[in-house]
Amino acid sequence: MDMTFLFPVQLSLRVAALATLTSLVFGVVLGWVFHRYRFPGKELLDSILSLPMVLPPTVLGYYLIVLLGRNGFLGRWLQETFGVTLIFTWQGAVIAAAVVSFPLIFKSARAALDGVERKYEDAARTLGYPEWRVFLRVCLPLAGRGILAGTMLAFARAMGEFGATLMIAGNLPGRTQTLSLAVYSATQAGQDSLAAQLVLVISVLCTLILWVSGRLLTPRWQA
Amino acid sequence: MFVIGKTSPHKAPPAAAKHDEAATVACEISLRVRGCCSQFDLHAGFTTQSRRIALFGPSGSGKSLTLMALAGLLRPDHGTIILRGRTLFDSSRKVNVPARKRNIGMLFQDYALFPHLTVRENVAFGLKPVFGLLKAAHRERVDELLELCGLSGFAGQRPGQISGGQRQRTALARALAPNPDLLLLDEPFTALDQPLRERMRAELFDILERFDMPMVMVSHDLDDVDHFAQTLVAFGQGRVLNVIDYETRRKTESARAILDPLFLAAQKRD
Image 1: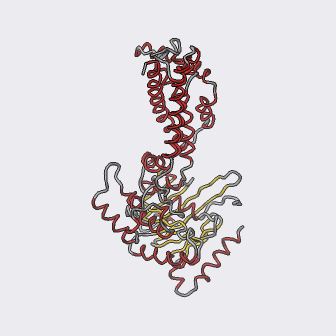
Image 2: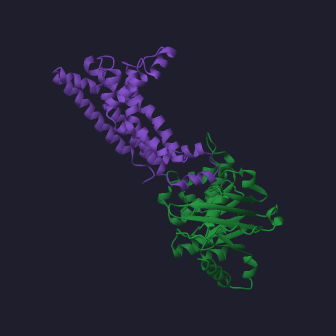
Image 3: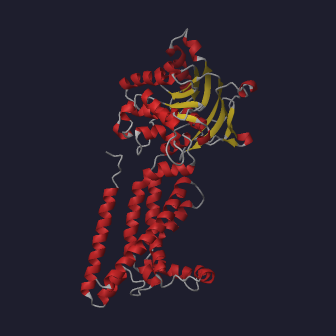
């Protein structure tokens, strides 16, 4: 198969996997902080962290360029300190996809952790467990379903990311052109069979994700 | 809804008793719990050398909150908690030993068994090291407890697959496994229906008798208290109304003669 087809597919999988991993770590940790602690401005911060879910992707792209672009304060610092540029790179696409998929994991992790009844945590505490072990041995297994569901959705969302990716990473064939961007370009260029192949791949992949997550979701202790 | 009058300070027990090293539990706490539209003030003070203490009173009298405070799951606003000479909480000296370091076992009202773990994993939970497997001695202890509580045949099952009575015994074995200094029992039989309750009460106390361990039980059930209590701490409206040497009085009086007036007293102040 030719690279016009294979490259976008493998790039999308790589970008989505790395983005999901990143937002999984941040989402679960922040979800736990929000579950465990009370602090002023908590709900406001929750709303801000959830913004990427509702804002137009182009707006996110704009924010990311302001932040990470050559004149953005983080972008300039990265450039001067490490010589790293994120604009028009596939790593930039990872960041765009991570930001977009983060709220899906954060929200579901917080809800799932809040859904773990306090008595289980208390029982672990009276049995000598410090907070981090309570989290690992009680909260995480009991909230795992919800977190996994959020992760699956996040992966699918990262696969389909278009707007923010286009703005920060561009649409460079063979470099930053992900599957969803390739579908757009192929359609624009009248390459109908390529577009159809790509559409088929992403449709099958997303169906597979939803099906597998549905099967994984049945907890083993519910006989 | 709790209706609370003014927050008069609770009468402090004699200073000598407060610092008595031999006391099983010396507790003198006050705390305020705020709900959305009400608040509840608890001022609980009692000192006893008894090894089987029943906190008795109607619902909403503060006995369960007191138990939570003893376990370290609820932080009182003021006061002291001294357990067998060890200060667990002292607001004036800013001492607050966290629950995990109190070495107090707790049997929760609806057991709070970990649904994702087997009976055996539940019992072994408090003995489990951070990394690796249980030590051989701990494995033996788990086996002994499973045997003692009649759970050997269900060790591989999950809490969702066993009966209410088996669940309770699992929770008991789990609480006893780390060999706590004190065992707390929160309304241990309310989750069971009446005929089973009688049997479980006998079974539970039978098991507990083999452990030389001081216990504090919260209950509003006359039969529970009558079977269990050596000393009775009667609660009402967030106060300790009376501390009674139940075992001694029971020799000459019927259970109802002792307990009924306490219930009435607890309700009178409404």
